Length: 176
Image 1 (cartoon, one colour):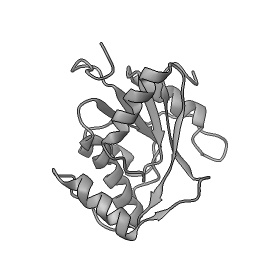
Image 2 (cartoon, one colour):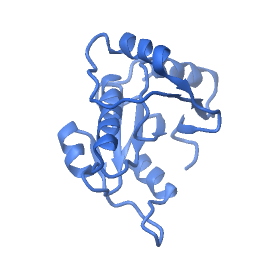
Image 3 (cartoon, rainbow, N blue to C red):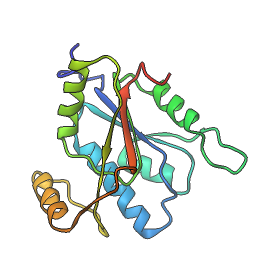
Image 4 (spheres, helix red, strand yellow):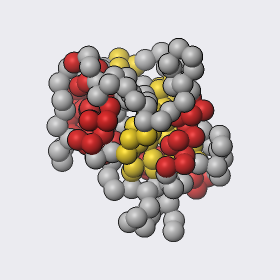
């Protein structure tokens, strides 16, 4: 199998996240947009939600994404990063893993970037600077969503400061 043509039962990339509770209407909208966006990237992408925040099980079932509720937490109830990463790694067979905050949208070219990185190196970590865009409604991820969203980002978006690392893409062999 090469990275460009994964077998139908295997995924090229697993995007995993530990969302906030789905109780706040705005958080609910932006997290649902992220999940739908990630699913729109195609059959080579698997989406996993880690944690047991309120509303997560229902949204995972509604969107047909894998839900891993049994995350270890610290004494304050905050999920442990090591547990989030370990659960996602164990539940996936993808050659690439990506942790992303549940409010980040990706354009399909993230897959081209990932494939190019895999051809250049066996060990890498991709992080990126994000664009901030105030989105208050569910987006439509139909055939021309990329062009519409790029135009909206160009018109209303602002580049976030470089310290805002909201996603990390890496080969599954890293950070074990």
